[in-house]
Structures are given as C-alpha cells and as structure tokens.
View 1: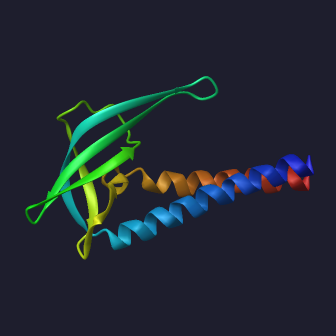
View 2: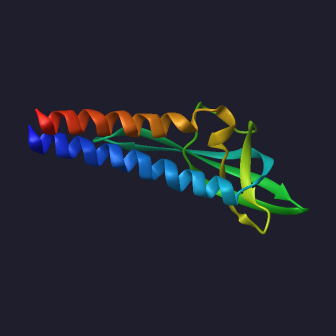
View 3: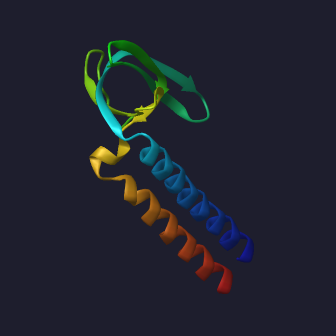
Amino acid sequence: MIIVGFVIVCLGIFFMIYYKVHKKQNNRRTARVQGTCVNITVNTSEDSGDTTHYDFSYDVGGNQYMLKNLIVPGSPAIGDQVTIRYNPDNPKDAGYDFASDGKEQYILYLGIGITVVGIILMIL
C-alpha cells in the first residue's frame, strides 16, 4: 500500500508543479489577442487513441505569428477563434489562454486532492 500511495503522491505533486509552470507562463504572457485556427492534425496511436493538435495564427503589431501543435479544450474548426496569451516583450512567447475559461485552478485542486489521498494510503 505504501508503494501505491507513493505513486499517487508523486502524481499529485506533478499536477501541482504543472499548475505552477502554467501560472508562471501566464504572469509573463500578460497580453491577449484572438488567434484563428488554420490547421487541424489528428494523430492516431493504438496506445492512447486519437490526439487532435491545432495550429493558430495571430497578429501582434502587424506581424503574423503561428502557434503549432496546441491541444486546446473543445473542438475548434478551421476559422474559429480562441484567446491567445502572449508576452508583450516577445510575441513569439505565446500559448492558449487556459486562464480565460476559469478552470486553471482545478489543476491545483486536483493535485492537492490526489496528494492527500496518496498520503492517506501511505499511512494505512
């Protein structure tokens, strides 16, 4: 039971670190712009099934930029727009605006919950 608990604690810590990295990126990427979906690629794997990746173009100050191979919630079609966060000092430093949907903190809560469950399993 200790080994299972330890693995679960490690998974919880992974989610908390993932949240922290995303939070740091969002602190750097303070500007927002609408990006347009320009390409959709579906990768098929026997192990994990289909994974859909999206390419978005966005314009900052008259310059065109591309974000490639993003995994985003929902299923945008070519031509659909999503909010892109970018660093005003370096517009190439950009990503999907996960904070705009208000669900970013669920990653942190999930990590904390999983860690607590793992600790309880280690104690039992």
